Image (cartoon, rainbow, N blue to C red; front, side):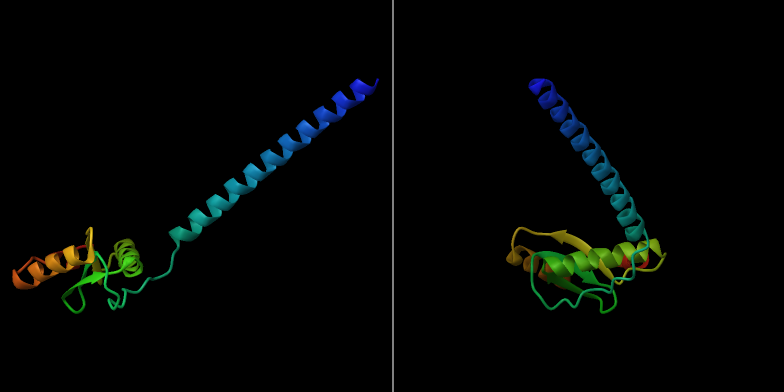
Length: 125
């Protein structure tokens, strides 16, 4: 009788644990779908300030300047590009490439400043 009671209790614990895991999975799936819907309706992200140097090369379409920016500004520029594409607007900021070091980015930036480079990508979302 004692082992039957222990076996019965063990099975109940397993069933309750399985139910909890299923409910948790359903909640996670629901939260994931809500966050996906929220990202589809994301708000406008302005272009970055271009003040912090880094290894990400971007082009400021408004001022017509090349800039090597840090991670946050690079990601902000990319979010701005994504928003502009989604709303059929010309780019305000255009991400080009992330280089290995700040110096590598600066050298490419200087190259683009001294040799004319096409920037017609600003007008094509």
